[in-house]
Every structure is written in C-alpha cells, then in structure tokens.
Amino acid sequence: MLLGIPFGRDKNTGEWKDVAEVTRGIDCNCVCPSCKLPLSARHGDEREWHFAHHTRNISKEDIVDCEFSFQVSLRMMIHQLFIDGLALKVPGYNQHITVPRQLNNSIDSIVTITGERLINTREVNYSIDSIFLGQQVDVIFNFGTATLIVYLSYRGREFPFSKRLLKNAKAGALIFDLEKLTQIFYRKPFTDEDQLGTARTQLLGWLKSSIEAKSWYYHPREDKLIDDRNNEINEALRNKKSATNHFTIPAHKLSKCKCLGCGHTFTGYKNIANSCPNCKTHLYVSNF
Image (cartoon, rainbow, N blue to C red; front, top):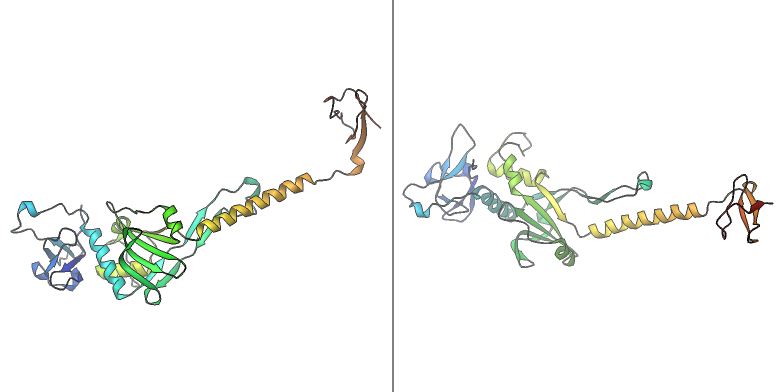
C-alpha cells in the first residue's frame, strides 16, 4: 500500500507545504513532487492527513505510477527545512576489527570513530542540493579541513560513491535512508510530547532528535584510527613474543651435556633425555 503524500508543492510560490497548512481538497493548489500531477488535500478522521493525486479530468496517458512520491516529498521538504536552518542529530560511528584471542582482555575490538553529535546549521558553512564529485547530493557541510556530505537514499536513488573516492576527497558521508524512515514516519512520534504531530513537525523532530534511519558510510578519520588500533595489536603481539623468547630457566634445572657420538657439548635439562643438536638423538648423550 502506498502511503499518502505528506508534502506538496505550491503551484504559485514553489514552496513545499504540509498537508495541514493548506485548504482541504483540490483548493490546496499543490502538485505532486514526483509526477507533477495535481494533488487533493485529504483532511479526514480515519487516517493521517495526506495529499492524494487528483486525477479527475486527467487523461490516462498522463497518469503515471507514482511509487516514490512519499520519499520524494520527504526529500524536498528536508531541503526546505535546511534552507530555513535547523539542528541536525548525527549518529555515532563504530568499526569492529579482529583482535587475536590472546589479546581479547587487553585490546578492544570496537574502534570508536566518532560519537553522536548535534550540528547547528547556523554555525557551519553548507550548501543544499549541490554537485559533489560529479553527483547530485543533498547537503554538503564544509568544516575547513574536511567535508561532510548528506545523501538521502531510497529505492532507485542509491548512494553513488566508493570509500576510496571519499578518502581521496577527504570527505565523510552520512546516508539518510528514507525507505526506513517511511516505515516509522506515521507510527513513531518524534516530538517532545510523545505524540504524532503534523508531517512537518514529525520530519523536523526526526532531523533534530533521532538517529534512526541515519548511518555513516565513511568518516575521514576512520582509516587512521583503525590503523592505530592494528598497530597497537601488532606491538602487543611483538611484546608477548619477546617476553616468551627471553624467558629464563633457573640454573638449578639446567645440566651440561656431552654427545659421545660426535663430541658436541651443550646445555640441557636435568632429569630428562636431552637430544644432541647435531645427531638428533639422545642415545649417546650423557650429563655431567
């Protein structure tokens, strides 16, 4: 079942409107963000308020299967909310690495790349709906020495970059999965009152207070932090090996040995059969 469209575009001003902000019915004066057909605002009592396509007097040739109108409307309204300025909650980011069993108690397998944080868009430089590495992205934050891109993804609009490209560009990437957001948008409140608000309130609350459907694809610091942890592991293994190699046996447990077969003398252990290093046998070895 396709969800009702929460946001429509005003035909006169080009602004994105919440269905709660417009006149009921076809007088809402809005069009679909995906197929550009007229919308009708449904203000009912049985389900959430939403826009629906108004297809009366529209030829069948002009009516298209508008499968992603819900996600497209979210994406367009997010752009408008960024233009107005907002607070954006960013999730933390951890990576797991393999730690040898003998070091499990001393070295953590989880590398913390970054913690959760809140970005106030009024305090940073950013652009909306811009080109990055030849691809259209939704938001580009410029932090001076590094760049952070935000990409709004849904089926048919997959993330276009590899980690190698992002590494060379010194850019991090956050993916906001609108498919996942769709599954909870009308079910989980994102407002402080713990009640479902208008579509605009829901979307603004999600951007500001939730990390659901948000994930890191790449962080500019992750390669160095992972390399540092792997170097820590290698150093710990070297130290363990060195400690094993330098383990000394008490003198009272050692014995001088001589091989009567080849005449070689060497140090062995008391009360055991010591093999000659040359002859590879203990048959001709005596302790003295």
